[in-house]
Image (cartoon, rainbow, N blue to C red; front, side):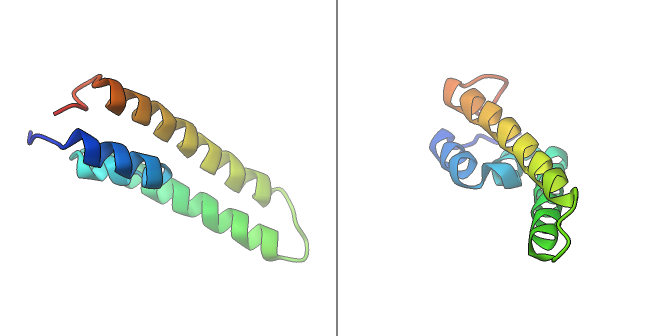
Length: 89
């Protein structure tokens, strides 16, 4: 395991947290890819349903996926700042 710059991880989480970029930076590849795919899927579902004429339940599904990734990124941000669970290198 390599050492990570806490400042870089904090900024990546702050600006790109819902996409899991901070996790990819910290070699947490599996969960980083999961966050990236889930966020992109939520964004696509939300946009397609929001731009279609017959708005259905997809808009809520997309927002729920994005909200879940936001909460996960917020928890990661707190953990990185406090140095919990090996996030501090």
